[in-house]
Image (cartoon, rainbow, N blue to C red; front, top):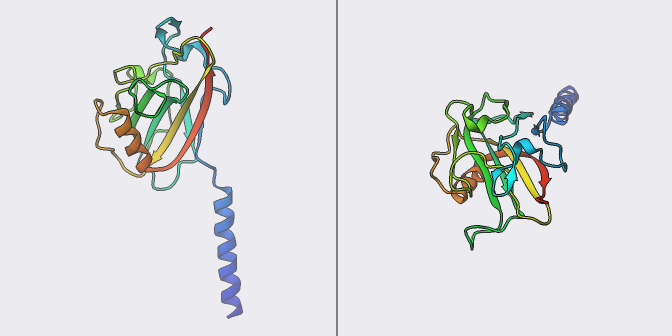
Length: 187
C-alpha cells in the first residue's frame, strides 16, 4: 500500500514537472519587436503611405498537443470600423488552414508563398491577403499579429468569407494563441 502511494506520488510529480517544463505556445518575428514600431517593410504602399506592404516573417514554437492547423491574423483595434455597427478595428490579414507541420512563415509569404492548402480571406481592404498598416494622421495605432493553434485541419471557409465569420471560426477552434503587438503612426 505504501509502495503504491509512493509510486503514485512520484508519477504525479513527474507529470507536474513535465507540464511545468513544457514551453508555452510562442510567436516570434525577426522584424517585429513587442511594443516596438512597425518597420516600413510591413507598412501599406498607398493612401499616403510608402511602405513595401510585405507580410512579416514569423516563427512559432511550443505547439500544443492536438494542433491540426494554424491561423494568423493582424488586427488594428484603434481604427474606426468601415462596416458599422461591427465592433471597431480594421482587419489587415486573416490566413487559416495553415498545415500543422508549419513552424513559421517567410517575409512576404502572403504575396505567394503561403504553405500549400492555406487560405487568405477578405480583409477590410476589400481583398484577401496581407494589407500593411495605414493609419490616418494622428495617434499611432496598434497592430496585433496573432497565431492560433487550431483543433481542426480545415475551417471549411474560403477567401470570400467575411472577417467576422473567419474570426468566429478561428476563436471557436483555437487551442492556444500567441501575439505580438507593434505600433505605427502617420506623421
